[in-house]
Every structure is written in C-alpha cells, then in structure tokens.
Length: 381
Image 1 (tube, rainbow, N blue to C red):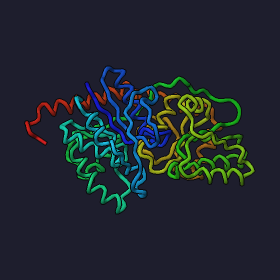
Image 2 (cartoon, one colour):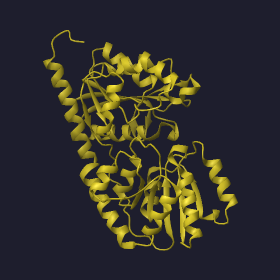
Image 3 (cartoon, helix red, strand yellow):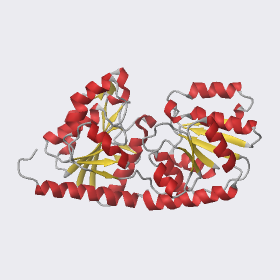
Image 4 (cartoon, rainbow, N blue to C red):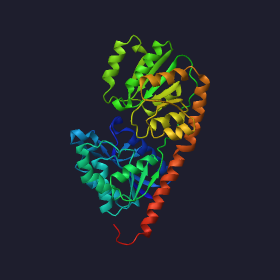
C-alpha cells in the first residue's frame, strides 16, 4: 500500500512527546513490512532536517499563535500545501490527531482531496474542556472528526469521547502502541535499590511524588537511590530545591533527557521503574519497561490498568507519596517478586506490544477502509 502519515510535531528534541515515538515506530515497521510510507510533520526549530532517526521525513516549520492552547494551535505558512503534496497518489492517509490545528486541518484537506482518513487519537480527545477549546472544537475538531473513515484508539474507553465530539459512526479499532525489541535486558541489580523515573518533568507526570517517595524510603532506613531521566517541562526547579534542602538529596540524580540506548541501559540497571503520573492517556514508557523486563510500579491512573492487572505484571499504587512509598518498600526488599514481575511483564509485552502485532492490526484496518471505499456508492461524501 501507499500510505501517507501525518503528525503534528517531530521535534526538535522531546517537545513532540510520546506521539512522535509512536509515529516513528509505526512508519519504520510498516516500511519494513513492504509498504510505501511518506511522512509529514511540523517542526518548531530552524533548519528542519531531511531525515530523523534514519527516516526520511518532510518537516514544515511551525510556530504557536494562541498562548492558552500551547502546542495545539501551531501554524506554518507551508503546511496546507505540504499536506496536499503528501496526499498525491496515496491509497490512504493515517493522521495522528491530537486535537490540534495541524492534524485536524490535514484531515479536512484529505477529505477534500477524496483520500480516506484513518485517525489515531492517542487518548487526547477527553480534556481540557475550557471555553477556548469549546470554540476550537466547534470550528475545527467536530467538522474534522466527522470526516474520518476509521478511528484507531489506544483503549476501548476512548469511544465515548469520539461520540461526544459528534464523530459519525465510522467505527474504531483498538491498536496498542508498541516498541521495537530492545537490545538491553533486565537482570536483578546488585547494591543499593535503584529506582528509575523516566518521563517528562511535567506536573502531571509527578516527578515530585517519585522524589519524595525515594527520600522517605531513605528516612525509613532503606538503601535506595533515585534516577530521574527526562526533559524539564516545569518541575525541575522544584526538584532541585527539594534536593538542596534534604540531607538525602544526593541520592536523587537528574540525568536530563537520554537517548534511546542510554535510557534502555537505565531500565536494565533499575530495581524498578516507577510511574506515578496522573490522568495518563496511555503510558508508552510502561511498554518500554516491560520490553526490557524491568519490574514496574505504576500509577492506577492508566488505561493499561486492566490488561496489566490481569497478567499480574506490575504493582500498582495510588498517585500519592504515601502509597508509592509503601508499595516500593515491599518490592525493593523482595528479590523473588522482582523476578516474577520481570518475567510476567516481558511475557505481556510479547503478547500485546510487539511491532509484528501492531503492523498486523494496522494493515487490517487499512485494508478494511479501502474495501469499504470500493463498495461505497459513487459520489458518497
């Protein structure tokens, strides 16, 4: 198949977040499976490169124009023209819709170009519902979603959100985000317990809950250190203040943003990966931990709670310092439980989140959309 893939941002750096990680993995996997895939994305920096991480990509310089909407209202003078050019000669377009101007405008352009649209929402259609977004949704989100041929969701829980935006009954298919097989493998570490936080330092990710839990564990007599990896998005100053004020602050080490190989190495060396985020739309980093076999202690506020719980593949805590401290105190003292979680987590990864599973599900969706288009009544919008 000839497939166009369009997403809002590719960078620079980690500004594009987890969506870009998903896009890169999908595009690379689809190409390896023999499909012809073109990739278009926005770029916040200057001098956009012709390829990223070994993938040819067309990048259009964009900039924010509505401060209250942040990255959801980026514009670029060449964006619409680039979308039209990317759509030429393709069988369909897969748009990663993040309730933002760039991706939603691409859906509308594709509809006018009579190219069927598969839209992947990444759990981002549920919030916020401020007045600004209500106006934005009426003008752009609702009209765009009404023109989607099929939705791809992260979980079954997303379907009601699609309905709330007035999306027509296009149907949705759940396709889990996946990650490539890593080169690193977890083994029980020697020495002090090594706890890893690997997410953006955004308030919703709750690095401060992680940091305070590590310090409390030390105050209770546990030999433990905390490793923090991720770009700052608001909480680094508070983290540094906490470290400077605590006698155990030296046990918290901030490593900044790590590359893929460096981060996999940290996963492999960790006693446990700790994920205390609030209102998490998915949590791809959990899948990354499972792929390596790192024991996981996760927030209960993840849509993966049910599938992970059924496999008994992680320990869960409410996203509070007290609850995470209690769960971690038990786990770091139980080597057998660490090994059990590692084995179950990796088995769950092999069953649910390999690239082979993802490509099979994606191409199945594409084939259904194209078959439905062939059967459609001529002239149907």
